[in-house]
Structure formats: structure tokens, C-alpha cells
Length: 182
Image 1 (cartoon, helix red, strand yellow):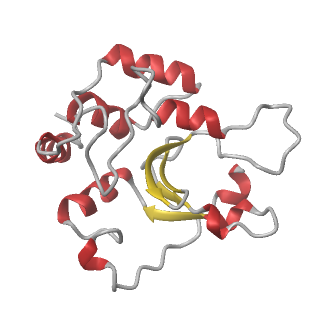
Image 2 (image 1 turned 90 degrees about the horizontal axis):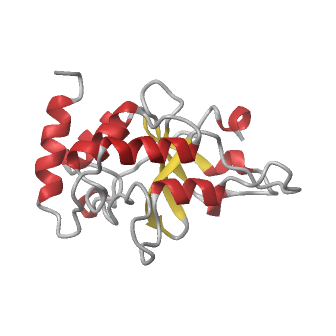
């Protein structure tokens, strides 16, 4: 038993009730995804896909599937990351932080992402509407200090995205590591 077992059990039960829930992925699928990404997924994120399901559950628009399995799927964690990382020789001001995988599209081009290189799997909100003068640092916010915290907030129905919480004041801090990771 590990530190995430109880949380994964509760998330799995709620995920199974989602109409868009997909069955969990295999260990081989996680390994293939990590190979394509070039880094390991945060352990809780990998366990989430292995135990709770391959997306189709979670807050609002639901989590992306881990990787493309059919030609019709639009967004996935792996392809979403690879599509956002500019080529090494690109002459562009645009960048995406290494190790930060998109997991959910909030709409209006905003994306929830997990920092797989952080110990806790910090959940970030990327809001390109906050970009100023080609400076991406002001577009990265900390939604939750950890993926576990973010999932607990979803389970409790107390996230900033919940209908009942719309009038509440949510002041997300800027991601302090943005400048050094972009």
C-alpha cells in the first residue's frame, strides 16, 4: 500500500461514474508514453492513468487520455506536450517548460498541467490570455501545490471551476519557477 492508494480508490470510484470514463491503461502504455515524452510521469499521475482510467473523468472538461489510440482523438497528454514544445532550433519567443504535461483543457485556451519534475506534481494553470509583450512568465499560475491536493479539491467539489464557487475569490499565485523553466 502506498501513500496514494486511498486517494486513487476514491478517484477511481468517482471516475467510473463519468459517462466519458475510459478504462485504465497498461504499464506498457505508461512506459511508451514516458519514452515519447523523454521523462517519467509524476508517480501519482502515472498511477491515476493505470488505476482510475485513461481520462474522461475529472473536473469540468475531464482529463485528456494519456496517448492517442485512434485517429479521431484530439487532445492527449503526450501529443499535447510534444505539440507545445518548440523544436530545439526554433527561432521563437514561445516556449513550454520541460516536464510540464497538459492534462485538461479549460477552454479559452487555458490548460491545466502537471509539473512531472516537481516532487509533489504541482498542478499549474497556463492562461495564454495573460501573456504580455511576449513574456510567458505571467501566464503560469499555481492551481494546486500537488496533484493529490488538486484531486482532493475536485472530489470535494470546491475547485475554482465549480459552479457554486464562481463568485468566490480565487487568487492563484504566479508559478515562481516559470522564469527559470521557460
